[in-house]
Image 1: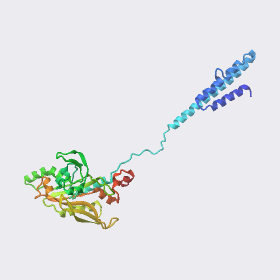
Image 2: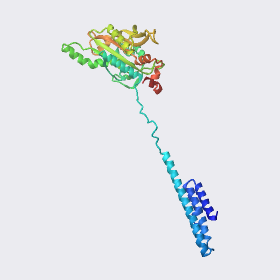
Image 3: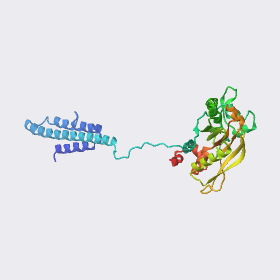
Image 4: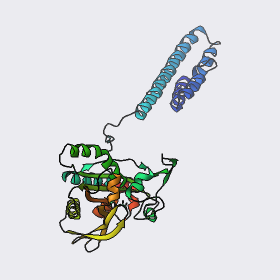
Length: 351
Ligand code: DAH
């Protein structure tokens, strides 16, 4: 192998070793630069004869062209590799599964509320919504529970740093019972007009579900919870109707006729007489235990009067039940707080 051949081989090897365009430019300078090996060879021809210059010059040129070709080939290879790399980095795997839109679902307590509304609507009850921030009068006094009455401690709640027209701070309603009075008041004009026109007295038949608040927190109590109020007033509405309506409701709600009710004497300022409603399943995992689901009673004449209605003509019953409790019983959940922790792993099980 002559010196030119080994020079070309050396250049090829140096170019092949260059891993980046910058390294390649350095290697190029060694061979083709102003002070490079080929320039040196050209300079070295000065002492040769004219005849020798001709052949030597032609041979150096061939070698130079071979080095240049090798350089060009390496440049191309490096830029191809770079492109390849870039394409790989930006590549899109069209075989990957797409990102699915997460479908939301109803909270278990919302499901219960919807169920309650449907069942009572089918029995001719209106569904009403009311404020969670209440006046002292609506939450207590109108319900025959005057200021300083010890029965107020049954419903200890939170107060808002703002006073109503009566000078008493607003409260976060401790029960949905204020909706009895609010709803009746809204319908008093309609009732008066009907009576004055000599027509039949319209009835009041409503449920009012919603959020309520108390100073309470353990496995079966949360400071925020739900209640659903019920009210049925008319000329002839009795405890018998309460029993029929509530029994029917419970059996429909739990999808079981294998269930009995018990009315246990109790006290509420706004009803007289008053009763707690307990249910007992005759079969299944909860069989044999009495489970309290609602407070109830015949609406107290003072409350009927506060509604703007005549207690001599209007009589009926009211109840207040706990949809959270009903949800726990229906799904077999034993800690109420799970419903309000917002843990998606828990909530997803109800979808
Ligand atoms: N408001 C009562 C409570 O939260 C529940 C209640 C009892 C509601 C009797 C009623 C009723 O309408 O008649 O403890």
